[in-house]
Length: 347
Image (cartoon, rainbow, N blue to C red; front, side, top):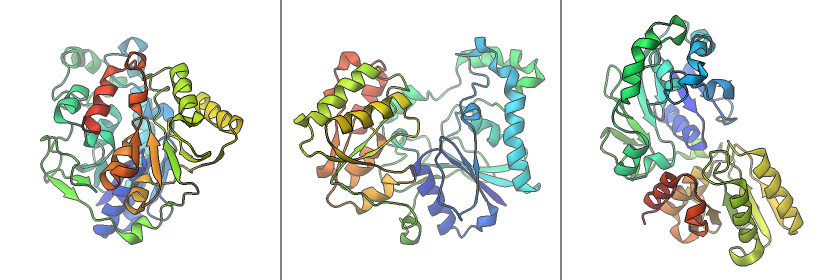
């Protein structure tokens, strides 16, 4: 048996590495499919970085059907299959993935050698209420998918048998019951899958992740501008307020950008810190906040509504400051995100 892990966040990295360690999985049997520039430490398995064009391909999305992206499904799937097949040598594999409703995940789940699917923690979605989760991921297949599926079946290039639509976000898939792996008691409490496994933070694993921080105040970023939650101008207004002294008094700051951070935001943040004579450091993409949250005893963690703040709040509520309240509600383009923040931070 081989093991394939989906990686697009640092919590994915941590959960995957703990699974490998605690199940004594041979490193040569591990493949990490890595997205958005995030990857686990070297030496834990084979690492394959997948281009964003693959990650964001629309497959058979009914919202984007007018783009005819489904005509390129076969090409995209062949790219992914070549990586997987070269790794497998016709062995069966177990797939560890955040959920099963993403079409790219479905493509891998429906690979002919996939025998088992398990789910790994992936941030805020694992901590919001069941009502909020089902608003984001309804426990049903959209009626338009059912209507259009016969149409997709007409074109071999759509590979419709690989792009399967699942109802349940954490559907039981495999020869045994699918498990949901987490590091906290409050994760996966959504009634969609009760087979939850809490992993123990292993020092041998956690010490391989960089966790050194230079300054006492840390700001963790969401990708709110690139995800069209707020405009760039709204973010600029918030950031100027944050560094002006109204919310932060000390001109020393460590910052952690989101993997999907826009270049415009990054440039503005760095230029404004220089303009206001801040001492600052940019924490590397390999920095693991989930590990850091468990060992932090004195650093203040600020952000707008990043899931990282949830991990910090679980361990150190007195050191954690979600600042989404400082955004004018009228300026938030995606009202579901506001409701999600309120659910995540229990308001």
